[in-house]
Image 1: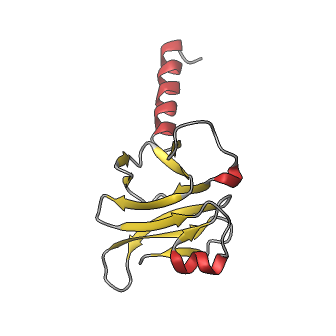
Image 2: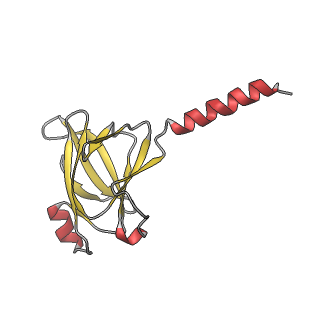
Length: 139
């Protein structure tokens, strides 16, 4: 049987490992929670590094999801990559959304990062969480 102090240390280690994965949620609006149909959920993929949004630095080790309310946003990764998105207060046509970098309320997306095939520099893009289809491309 394991001594109590060893069990407590093991539990502490497991809890700290879980928190290092970035499971916290960052909300762009302070106030009462909105329904899922009034926000955009943007999950951060493993390849995304620390992100700055509206002058707030979100360490990747702490955050895994960003909840966005309607508005214009530019997300900056600390390697110089950035992506601009616009969220209208109403639903928009999917094709129009793709062309203009607009995200649709009520949807869940994944922010991904990697090297641009054209320039070789760090780039960000957004995929639909259900279909894995690229929705906003800044590569």
